[in-house]
Image (cartoon, rainbow, N blue to C red; front, side, top):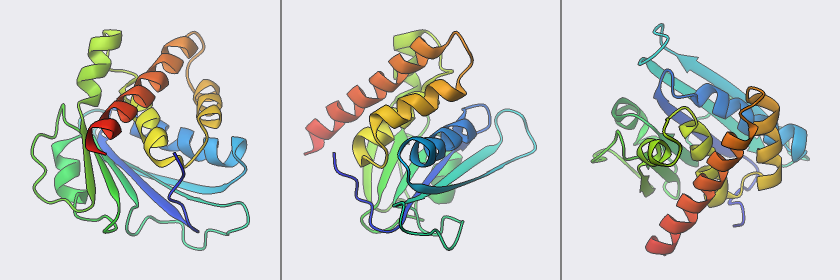
Length: 191
């Protein structure tokens, strides 16, 4: 799928501490810069709790020849929400033609949302497939890249392999594949 990117593509990943969204943001930025040769900046914020508090990662990606002049996401093109609190806080902060990917495991009824809503039970389907939820963040990255095309799948896989613990490479590759599949399946039903 072609990237909707023009000069600057803003992505916000929001949820709860312990879901791996900070790592997901780092992986996405590294896929863009190290492996795709684009410009990217990544920032993060999280509450004082190690698990369960608010967690947010932001990534801005631009073509190699376009400098990123402001390193903060102002109005995202794409928003991933993996908690009800994240939906309430960020669901309305999207470009009019933006995309919200909702983990419907935790977010059932988006009330304050703009843009195109894509609802997938990411965490639930990750648990069904792998027996654990630890790679739900990687599944979500697969969904994002399949839908947006913001980085190449090859670059994303290389960045994932570079960052995940040794011995989990195949699990994480399978998680990416599940994400790609879920996105294709969902897009086929709404197009």
